[in-house]
Image (cartoon, rainbow, N blue to C red; front, side, top):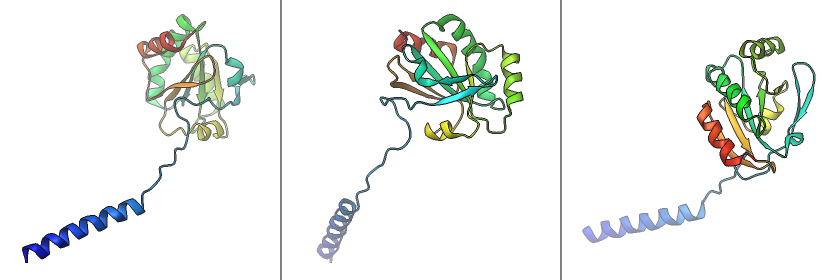
Length: 171
């Protein structure tokens, strides 16, 4: 009886292993990931000026997806402005407002209240947000001077993190 039980256990184990091998799933990578060329996009600022990501090549860029109603987004903006004032010659910041529950007027007020001097563009249709597969906000991509994504940061960035990115990827 013990021998029969051991044979059944072994048979079940091998049958399971064979089934696992036969039904092995392949993972399909989606979205944007580190090491790939950053997809180009063109969006407008609140004053109607068009900014295209590829026009910023030649220096590193932090592309930050955010919204005015997002507490972590609001928390990182003073550090982002401080960083831009100090490192703006090395690293460009492009803040992409995802326009979910936001209006141009709210974004304008936010820019004024936080005294932001870096470019803020509006993703009115959400196309860039979808293209970059943005789930939580804030999410930032650090792109080197050749347009390659070098880092992805989910959640707010501190001034110190931005400085480290500038030292690592800035020109």
